[in-house]
Image (cartoon, rainbow, N blue to C red; front, side, top):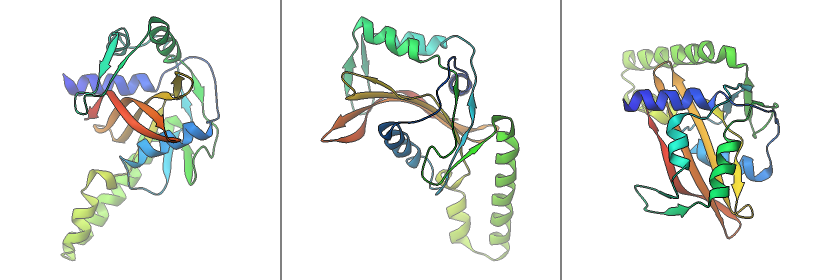
Length: 206
């Protein structure tokens, strides 16, 4: 059930309505920080197009209709006003065609080629592991078997800001294979001119 929820959330992140293309300096800073917590790859690879279904998944609707959202680990919480709830839900429905070079050393790929792109990199990774096994190179095997060293492709919504741009909501998916990936929807907070993860709303590894 949990895996099914995560998978459906990921699929949702790939489907929005309206068109943007650029990221602001804050957008880039927040997303880069979030992605670096998942992957050790130097290059951030992301799909070019986020299409639209015209609706927000039931789970996210239910979450953002709550007045108070609490991170189950940190216990940080935010109480949303009615207008904030409506605004967040309205923005979680955008169709985005991303431009190239959104990130330093970033790589944009066609959404249709994501699975073949991941298959190729995973085949290379497995080949390297097999060769390391022959060479009895346990350090390389251990390194490449760590999730952060898997190849990842990201898909993400445009960050949404509230409270005079001091609080930001991000929602993204990171795929590392057909049945491998993770999602996250979380609030970041700006303090002392720095963005830090504040409240994880939903997400996990599948």
